[in-house]
Amino acid sequence: MKAAILIESLTGNTWKAGELIAANLQQEGWQISGFAPMGSPDHAAIQAADVVVVGTWVHGLFVVAQAPWGVDRIRALPKMSGKKVAAFCTYALNPGKSLDVVTRELGSTGAEVVGGLTLQRGRLAAHSEEFAARLADAVSVA
Ligand SMILES: Cc1cc2nc3c(=O)[nH]c(=O)nc-3n(C[C@H](O)[C@H](O)[C@H](O)COP(=O)(O)O)c2cc1C
Image 1 (cartoon, rainbow, N blue to C red):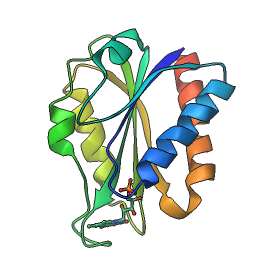
Image 2 (tube, helix red, strand yellow):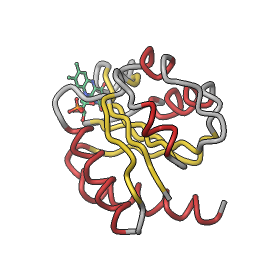
Image 3 (spheres, rainbow, N blue to C red):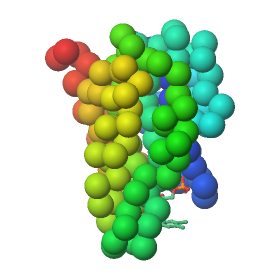
């Protein structure tokens, strides 16, 4: 399997999670066709990928009004019909419904959403490993 990874990150946690997910997927035998900020997607890498992984972070008032950052950038992504997509959001205390918003928006790219997970910023290694394992399972079953 080939994955392209698109990341929205302000302070680096989501970028780090993306790197950990890429490393975990490579351990599962996957190739990474590209790793780019969501604002400047690598179209060739997306084209080459079977699965696109989209990561962003949660902003809000920590326990209320949470939303994913960068929804406008998700909306601006190229059409991804025929691709599978999986999303994650890093957060500190409570992600609210941010992941639901991301997956809904990703659905409008035409991609098939195969999963998503929220990743607590203090447990990035464990949660990134879980994300990669679940993604590999979801794709192998599909
Ligand atoms: C302005 C701002 C608002 C935030 N609001 C929330 C929030 O409402 N709930 C939460 O769980 N984390 C919140 N966080 C924490 C971030 O989601 C968390 O640190 C995330 O990992 C940041 O990702 P990044 O390092 O890739 O930018 C907020 C962070 C910032 C900077």
